Amino acid sequence: EVLCRLRLFKSCDKAFLTRVAAVSSRRFCMRGQRLCCAGLATQTMFVVVNGEASVTLAGLEIRKCEAGQAINVLALSGCEFKPTYTATCQGTAEVWALTRADL
Image (tube, rainbow, N blue to C red):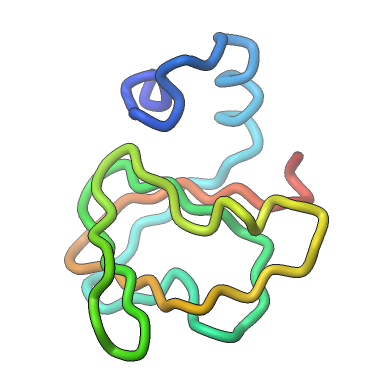
């Protein structure tokens, strides 16, 4: 039910949402905790469920991610993904993590 309320998954069918929920892991993050770091390979996409994360490039904030927004969507592709940005939780946050291997 949480996923269907998020913008990212609004138009997805129930079978897909059930699969995503089954393979995702819920993570609770503290202020300042990094979800990904610039230049470090990752295979994990994060969906912000509650709270907020900021995305920075060269120390400048370029985006705020709120509930329903995803970080690292390209990490689920078949290619190695090294983000050029760092994503950091701005307070207590709940995110769902989905890895390439989960799919």
